[in-house]
Length: 460
Figure 1 (cartoon, one colour):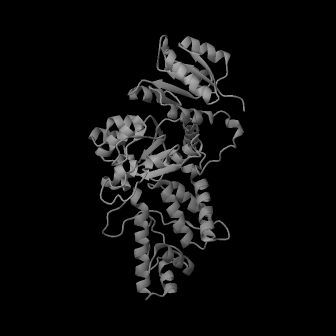
Figure 2 (cartoon, rainbow, N blue to C red):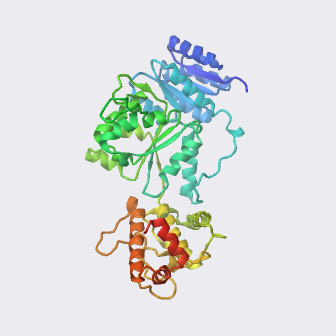
C-alpha cells in the first residue's frame, strides 16, 4: 500500500510541525497550510487520505474547509483541531460532518488512535459489501435509515437514536459499529435503567480495590471495556442527575476516574445513546441536563415504528417464522394464510417488531407447524377461538390485561405476555387434574405445543 497522505491546516507553525513529525513517524506523507486559501490550493493539487484543520484561521475557519471537502472530496475524513475546553466548537464541527476532533494541547496517543481509525476508511471498495445486518424492509423510511447508518459509520460523532420500544434501536447501534473503523473492537451495550443508582459510578468508570466496602479487587468500568470500540447507552434518559454530571465530564475529557482513583485514565470510545423517552420533555422538566443532551445528541437518528412501514410486515414475518422454525426444529417454515397476513398488516403493533416476534412465536406454538390461520395470531382484540369453537380456557391476546389488571405496553410487554400464558396453562392443568393431553384440548392447542410452552415458561 502506498503511503497515506495527510493535509495539516493551522496558522500556528509549532502545531503544524508537531503534527507533521508525529504523522511522519507513523509513515504518512504530509503537506501543511496556514490559511483556507492555501488549503484549497493543496486540495486541488494532491489526493489526500486525511485532513487536520484548525477552527480559527486568518482568512476563515475550519468549517469552511470542511464544507469545501464535503463538496469536492466527500470521502475524505476531516479532523478539526479545537482549543482546550471548547466543547461547543467540537460539537459544531461534528455536526458539520467532521470525522473527529483533536483538542489543544495535542495528546499524541489520542492522535495516533484517531489516525489509525481514519485510515481504515481509505479503501472501502476492497471490503466485502455489507449485508443488511438484520435490518429488513424495503419501505422508504427503512432505506433512509440504512443510508444514514452508512454515513454515520464513517464518523466518530456521538449519535442519539430515538424511537419507540421494539423498533430496533440496539440493532441500529450495532450496525453503525460494525460498519465503522471500530468494528474490530468491542461493542458494549448497557441499559442505564437497569443499574442501581449507587453502583453506577463503579459500573461505568470502574473502581480500585478497597475503595468501598466489598471492593475486594480492582475492576475496570464499561468505558474501559469498550476501549477502541463503541459504548451503547440504552435508555439514557434513565440516568440520574448526579451521574449525568460525571458522564458529561467523561465525554468531554475523554477520560474516566475510577472510584478511589486519584488520576484520570484516557479512553478512546465512541458513544451511541438511545431512549424511547422524549429527551426534549425531560430537558424541559429539568430531569436531564442540557449540556449532556447537546453532547450526546450531536446527530440524531430515528427508528420508525412498524405502523409506518406496514408494507414490510410480510418480509419481516417470513424472516421471523424461518428463525422460529429453526429454533423449534420444524421441517419447514410455517406459512401465513392470506387472511392472517391481512390481519397482521391491519394491526397497529404498539410493541412494534418485538411484538410481531412474540405474536408469531405464539402462533407457531398454537398452530400445526405448517400453516398459521388468522385466529391463531390472537391479536389484541381478537375474539376468534383457535380451532373450531371457544376453548374452555382461553389464553388472552398478546398485550391484553388479565381481568382486574391495568393494560401494559412497551418494555413490559414480553413479561406480561409470559405471565398471562403461564396463568392460563396452570388453570388448564388444574382443571384437567394435570393430564397434559386434556389440558392441551382445553387450551385448543396440540400436546406438543403445550409441552413446549410448559418447558419454555418453567412451569412445574
